Amino acid sequence: HLSRILAWYKEKFTKDDPFENGASFLMPIGALRSLRKMAHISSGRVLVISGDKGHNKPESFRGLTSPQIVTHGSFSVMVNYHALGAYFISRGGFALHSSQEESSLAVSCFVLPGYNEVDNGADFCCFADSNLAKMNEERKIKFPLICQAFEEHVEHFGPNDFFVTQKSLMDENV
Image (cartoon, rainbow, N blue to C red; front, side):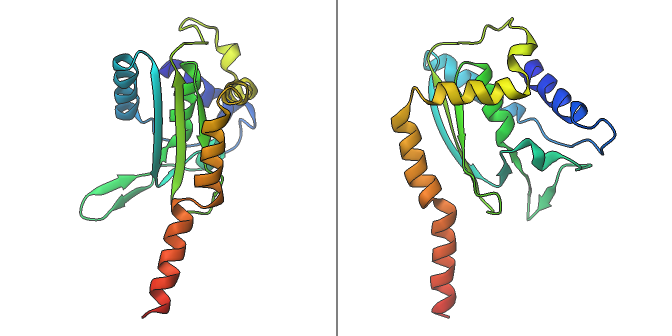
């Protein structure tokens, strides 16, 4: 699955305009290993909801020359939610990502239904740029309640909206 995802990124960032500055992104290897173990333990049925500073659109990586590392007593990096979503799609699942690009918090939901629609030996062409999004859309339609819950509780008023509201209320009480 990892080689399929890396090939997707290589195609994405060289096919559009090979003379652009390229991109820089991190692969969440530790998270992918944990998710693989979680899927094994649960017979391939997994639902993960995660929120953190991160990117869920590959265009966010274009033109970056190095990963953004923030130090604050320790260090942190932006989560590559797009790669995590691509992993779930590669395993036969799908991903839902929050659409608030300007927010400091990205929220994603990842689902593995317990069966693998993409053969481990599948040709890369089925995982190409436009097919990745198409597979994701086709699969999430089969789970309308998860999609509805994500829409209602993340898109309409999610954690970032709560944070902004809370901060505004605190600023008014100063």
